Length: 73
Image (cartoon, rainbow, N blue to C red; front, side, top):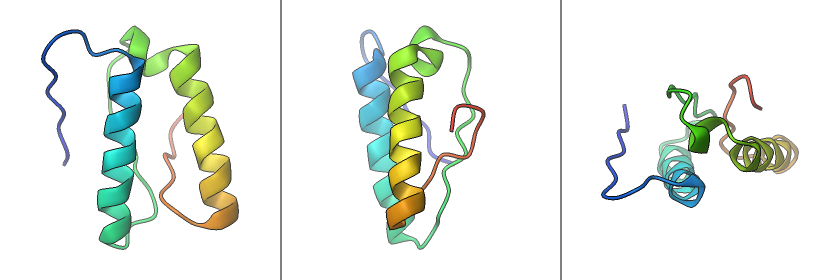
């Protein structure tokens, strides 16, 4: 389990940075998926986050890498 604690307002960029960090860490461990479990906060389910996750997952599927197999990907 990887947890994130943020000082201040956790906006979309902070979420994207966390996901990138988590994917790198999991890839180093040989994992291929990052199934996030999170609430419906605007920065988790917003258009920006959903589109970035989908784009990343398309690249990961084509090139190899850690995907985020959830309802947005």
